[in-house]
Length: 409
Image (cartoon, rainbow, N blue to C red; front, side, top):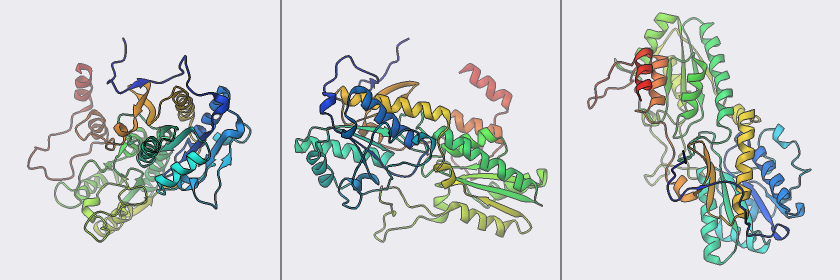
């Protein structure tokens, strides 16, 4: 059966005809935003495929430290060759360096024109892809001919429409280790509480998937689902019962959860403060919860683990490594086919090209009424941690009922 895609989605892959002479191509690669497992894999995949097409190795540039590398005199672009990227997939991070913000479109397009760049590959999340789209639009307005192709990168897995972002599987696997460690710490202490904070500014995919995988978590808190600490339906009352029953408890919280409880930082004019990439600046829910738990559970031993940067910095797992390579190859195919202002990704198990504005329109989020969240709650036994006057707090489905429901669907 053929995949039915909206009219704006095009299947990715090599084309019979290409519209650029490989010997006349000057390509540039830039990595933007926070670190994510697989960045070096994508860079290596792009370089190797460009050379396979016949692009001269001296004509592949690596832009240093994000978009500002186009015009920062202290960090000139580096020449990328097959030899220089050989083995970089075995290390974490990005050999190009990365940063947030710094997207001065006028200066970037000026350098693209000056250096004769006619292919630009932007590896980034919502902010990076928004920058790529802005470069594409500015090039078009300025009459600068350059194919701008995005490679969606988000350790939070929050890129709209994309099945999953590279590095996500690796992040879940490593996050699971932190949860298992929290279980050991909590169960080895008197009335122990293991508290783990994971990535997830606006989307709780890592917290949900890692908790499902680990099978040791008693409560999962994500940005998409509100919760309260106190009260008969609050988190603490639930944890109190868990500790009475098991002697300990494990809580997993995504970094963007509970911001309404703490109140967000304002930038002085009433709007929420953001970082250089436009992401909201979050207060630390992990440290806040630890403090509140220590105050509420007077005789409990709270063990707090924040593995964020350990997860971001590691090399990626084999499944992500293969995914990175395919994304990189399809990006090069797109540029040679003359596509610009697009990003490449896996949609319903098929690799496609999507217009960048479509995938940056909003963050992809966990559906509080969807099957994934229902499965997690059924697996964990987690109730609703807040009063819901509009909706009754229905009892959780048992595993048998949930299985029957899924079979019917």
